[in-house]
Every structure is written in C-alpha cells, then in structure tokens.
Length: 418
Ligand code: FES
Ligand SMILES: [Fe+2]
Image (cartoon, rainbow, N blue to C red; front, side, top):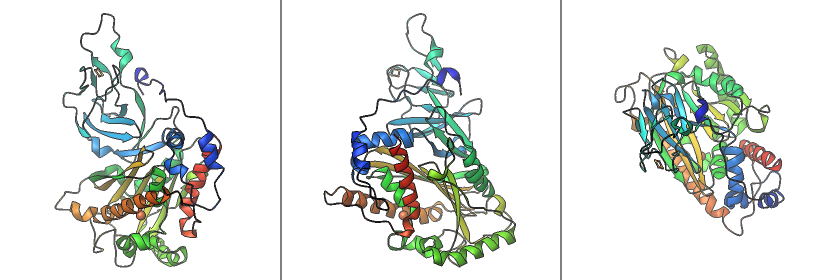
C-alpha cells in the first residue's frame, strides 16, 4: 500500500453500549435474535464496527477491472470504494472521498478512467488510478499534493476474487487461501469472467439477509425450483447417500474437493474465517439450470472431464458467500447500507474464454439464482415487517437452521466481548 495514501481511518465514536447490553440480556439460547438487533441504529453502529470494518469482504472479480483504468465502485454502509486497476497493473481499493472537502470523487458505478484520472465533480481536484493527487486548481503556493492522495484500504485477490478490508492491520488471510482458495482454484475461478451482475436492495437488516442465506429450512416452501434441483434443501439424513455418490464421481474424475471448515467462531484468532462445503444435485441435473442441462463450458479441473452431479458452497468472513458448479460460479455480496436496508449483489462467473450467445446464454445462466434471490428478497422483507411488531417474540431454531445458529452465536460472542 502506498504510504502517503495509507492514512489511518478515523471512524466516528460509537454510541454508549447500554442498548447493546440491554438487548444481549434478553437473549434466549437456541432462539432467534430479539427485535433490537434488527432495528436499533445504535446496535447497527456496533455491527458496522465489529463485523463490517473488522473483516474482509468480497467486492467483485478481477475480470471486472481487466484493463488499466478499469474501475467499479462499491457501497458498504456509508462508505464508497473505488476498485481500480492502475497503469502499473495493480488493483487498488481507494476510498471515494475527496481530500479537499469530502465530495464523492467518482459518481459512476463502473467504467474506465480513460485519461487515467478521476476528477472530483466539485472543484476538480484530480487523482490518478493509484490515488495520487495530480492536480489541485489554484491552491496557494507551497501546497503539498503528495499529502492529499485518496486514502487506500487493503485489497487481496484470491483466485481472481477481489476482497477488501477496512481493518488496519487486516485479519490474516491464510485460512481463506486454504479453504476458499483451494476450491476456487479447482473450479478455475482465476481464469473466469463475470458474465452478469445484479443488485437486489432488500428492505431489511443485514443480519436477516445473512441468517436467511445460512439455512435451507426455508428452501422447500420458499424456493420450489431450487429444491427440485438441489439435495441441500432436504434434511441431513436424506442427503447422505446422494452426497456419497457425488464424492465417488469426484474420485473417478480425479477431482479433489475437500470440505474445509474455519467458519464463524471456529476461525483461529487473528484469521479471517472461511469454509467450503459440498452438496449434490438431484439426479438428472448436471448443474443449477432450468432443464438440468449444461449452462456453459466446464471450468478449471472439470474442463475436458465431466460433471460430478454436485456443487460447492463457500463462505468468507461475515458477508461473502459463493456457489461453484462445474460450469459456472455465483458470488453473493451482502452489503449493509443502513439499519433496515441491505444490498445483496449477485455475480455470475463463467470460463474466461466462453463467448456469450455461443457458449452460454445470460438469461439461462441467471435463471436459477435470479429467481431464488428474488424469492429471498420477498421473504426477508416480510420477516423484517414481522420482527418490527411489538408482539414479536423470538422462536426456537430447528436442526436445519444449524448454520444460522452458528452464525448468530458467533455474532453474540463478539458482541458480548465488547
Ligand atoms: S470537494 Fe473535491 S475538489 Fe473540492
Ligand atoms: Fe433462500
């Protein structure tokens, strides 16, 4: 990271911990969280500090900034970040806050800084793609441009997937490399490209979005099309035989896809958490497609071999989730915006050499997870409306909500240590 740009972030002071402590005192183990965790703006500020600012978050894929000057912007809470490839080929995460009087510098969601510059729309201070201030009109003699570069946060590219963190120093990435990285490598994600991106703004607290993502108890009633294709929607006892058959097919194909688990509270101290799980598809489905047929050319180690009738699901940190099929990948990025608004962005990956129209059709590629995510948006928003009621009383989890409970327990452990 360029030293002049690595100014220490200066987050505003947190409100007093009393509302958080009062809410923690009402927790019933094995039950959903009480309303305050989804409604109280003071608790949201603690969430932002201890889960959002403290962890790594996926923001996209390196194919989105393939050429020098290519950039995209990402909003997380009240922060906006410019992810840009510099003339030196390095990808950086620059804070989108002008060093003059604080305007957003870049107001586009993506593009190419053609001249290699970002020009602030307010008084035209100009920054290059590495964040250096190159022009500041009419400033007094002696003004030192080198002290006013855009601030930069840490960025890592793991098998083509871009992660950023606000934390200084950041959590260590080793467990991410050895679980997420290993699996993403098998699926050839470093050589993939983003075929489509969609953002879903959900009128709900970010934890309701993630808690919903972590369990498949709702898949049967809420996602009929998903449940028809994915064994994961069934109770554990019904998953074992098809999952074993998938593992045998992997062995026959010579593909190693291990389950690795360093997730949530199980991460070693100082490490970002990550895991990788496996699950099988219903017989007759090669991938997560409408008709069971292939959606795109096989990727990574599957290329030149065959489908294994399964998929991998991966989680990194508190907000980044992934699904990998042999012919395409799906990135889910959950970005809390305010206490009751969350952006859920989905990106579809295919092999970097695949040609749209010839090798894949975007509409077919999107169908499974666009419809599933639309269904999730509805159920999560209705969940928030119910939670808002004065009569809401958190009920007990089922065994099928084990991963949601694990996530919530991790969250509570962190909050109790504050
Ligand atoms: S706020 Fe950006 S140039 Fe003034
Ligand atoms: Fe869902």
